[in-house]
View (cartoon, rainbow, N blue to C red):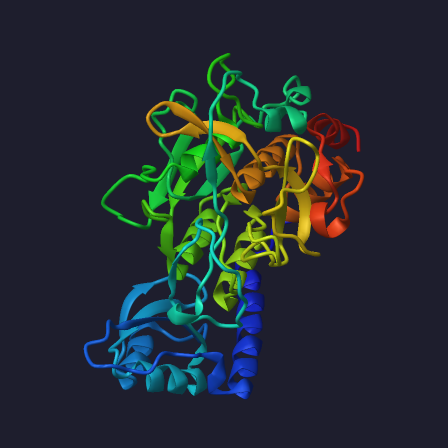
Amino acid sequence: METDKGEAMRQLLKLACMTAAFAAALGANDLRAEQPSAGKKPARLIVAFREDLAADARKSVLDQYSMKEVEALGAFNAVVAEAPGDRYHPSSMRLMSDSNVLLVEEDFTINWIKAAAFQQTPLPSLSDVMGQLPKFVKTDASDGEVPWGIARVKAEKAWALTQGEGVKVAVVDTGIDCGHPDLKGRCAGGVNYVDKAKPPMDDNSHGTHVSGTIAAVKDGKGVVGVAPKAQLYAVKVLDSEGSGSLFDIIKGLIWCANNGMQVANLSLGSPVGSTLLRLAAAYAKARGVTIVAAAGNEGGAVGYPAAYGGVIAVSALDSDDKIAEFSSRGKEVALIAPGVGIKSSVPGGKYDFYDGTSMAAPHVAGLAALAVSRGAKGHDAVLAALKKAAEPIKGLGPNEQGAGVVNAGKLVENIRNP
């Protein structure tokens, strides 16, 4: 059931206030800013104000701390602001204790799809962020329209009843090459937060590969997706290298919530959490968005946003029904899906095989689209339907596979005959 927007905002901001109070009690260690240095690039902070604070009052607060608003979020009364390098450390600390401010976080920029060392810290600074997830690895392509992953989730058994017609699926990623033969007619819109002057075209390949697994057309050529008639929306938050800012990821989730997306796939992640990212995920859930995210590729703990409640975390399965060695795992994992040697579309009308939990998540996003098309509404209903249709894999524990691999045939039949 969708939550009223005003009530959702009040509850989320209440949570933010509690978080900010806790952070203030912990002291300055919660924002480990680098020591100021001459000529340092201005630090970008995301500042969430009291819900009733007007724009002119926000400006007044920022002026007190020699900060300048760069962009407003449009939710949580939050903005991203810049502080001169030589004032960053004292400004952030004083802002945390200002009665008009609910919380402050650094707007860090990382590569969200390239794996490195994994570490966890409560609130990250750029120097603290040493690892990212999930990675993808290329192998050789081969023939056949139905990739093994699509066959493994038994997508074909659902298509007589539904192919995901009309379901809005956002791909929060590097963009989509909507001119690809298998994606023509599947793209219905989107937004580019990397360069607002350009369409959300994929200049990396990651987003296009993810999109093919979700909704590549069923035409007897190339590949086919889990939900071949779903509508794709490109939400470009990552650049050609897979890098992006925390603020842009948050904006991407808010866009999904405010533009009627029913499913959002986030094949990206960070080893460190963010209160505002968690709030953005909760906001999207309250507006009816089912969020599916990659668990991560470090073989350790589940990354963010996959680790948050209200997000469906997906680990990676190989063709031998074993969890991929690289796949992250933990109690947050809800489901497992194919993520090794996954053939899908890449820019320029081509195809390739990639590995990663990035490739596992879109299988589940496609399955979620099938569930929505059959009448499941919102995160709770969709997740319940997916878990009910999941089949546990012998030899894997719940921290590795969650409820197991979803059988698409069972999924659509269960919703038809609950």
